[in-house]
Structures are given as C-alpha cells and as structure tokens.
Image (cartoon, rainbow, N blue to C red):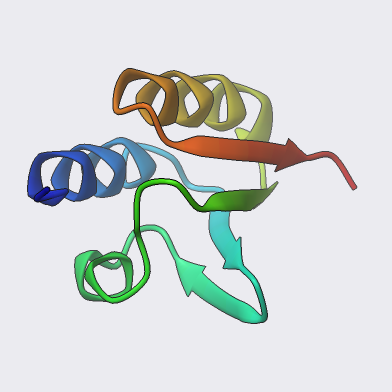
Length: 80
C-alpha cells in the first residue's frame, strides 16, 4: 500500500504551523515537515508518538490528530 497521499497530506498540514512537530517512531525522530523523512519512516500498522512544541501547538495538535486519523495511522500526541 502506498502512503504517498498520507505523507503529502501530513507534511502540508504540519507546514501550516510554526510549531515544531516531530514524529517519534521507535528510536527515530522525524521532522514531520520533511516529506523525505516521512517517506523513510511512515508505515501503516506502526504506532507513533507526535511531539508538538511552539506558539500554535494546540491548533497543530488538533490538525495533526485529524490528518493521522483520516489516513488510519495510529498516533499518540504526547503532551509534555
């Protein structure tokens, strides 16, 4: 299954925000604004953690949760 649509969607959504949005997949950390980083990391069936920090973090968290759910990707948004 190709995740190209999901990757583009996630990246474009992340780029609307000023906050830093980082995806943690096992021991790797990927900048969600980087399409290349997502291509090498995003696999359906895995679960991920999303770390969001910045001036518009709350809006970013809501938008990212929505886009991950839309593509049936399992993500936990970490509030730390």
